[in-house]
Length: 384
Image 1 (cartoon, helix red, strand yellow):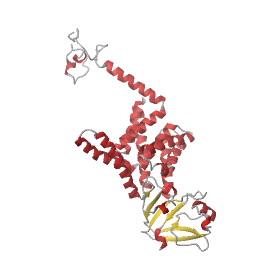
Image 2 (image 1 turned 135 degrees about the vertical axis):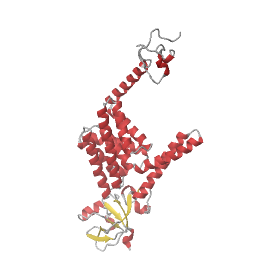
Image 3 (image 1 turned 90 degrees about the horizontal axis):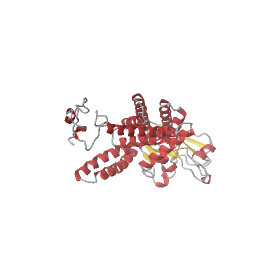
Image 4 (image 1 turned 180 degrees about the vertical axis):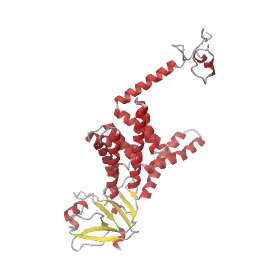
């Protein structure tokens, strides 16, 4: 066998391959590795196999929207960790999955623009509210509302219902203080499932809500951990390359370890504290906030707070609220005031604290059947 055609080939299948310019050469002069049934392109069998595989993937993703959502979330998570940025990661993941699902160029561009805009909006909401504010704080309500608005807009732009998108965004943001403090993978799964379930409850699709919940977590709550992970992965990755084998494990270690440090640093900057990221308050004080989570800040302007007491109560105690009391009974419930302490909350003390005062704010912890959850501010300087 000489591997030659008995007639000249009228096409040049690969101009960059010198063998293709030999009109009597068969399959790139490699007949033991390739075949050319049509006689016109030695890559025809290969491309046919690739086309068949792509068609199978597209059919599978189109038929399984939940799997499609999971693949999109996974791609976005991987791209985000590599440091390409939230908008690019979200847009690229949507474009890739839409393309694999058989979408045309217009559909790919539309999906990528919507995903990128969603990621940007979630990131902006996080920057404005401190990412995962504690229960009962003004920032907490703003964060939930912001997520709801972004979820609504994203769902509507994608052809879904505003209600289901808003519910997915609001529910995952509302549960943030309870679930976002866990390991990255665990919290991502919980936000994904919770967002999907909320979407179904609102009459939408699980897959759409899952993406909303996951994006809300990755591009809002995880800001510090992702940035820290990228820095750590790069630094330890360089060390791994220099030292030889095992660099992949070293990079993974850098992403996790530095990611945790990044999360802690972000919490320190924004003043958000929890049991896994202890703040300056003693444990016996921190437990008076729901889940032990609270935020610390310095007042930028003179601010008025309120304190409820009974007859003969201490008007200068450390516990206050930024919300005007609406009555003794409501105050007892919201602040979980154990009546064994003798505080019926019948008198309201109003006091304005000067700019520069350090305060710690969160939701009141439940106690002895009282649900708590009301706004609570601890001001050490109030005793002075």
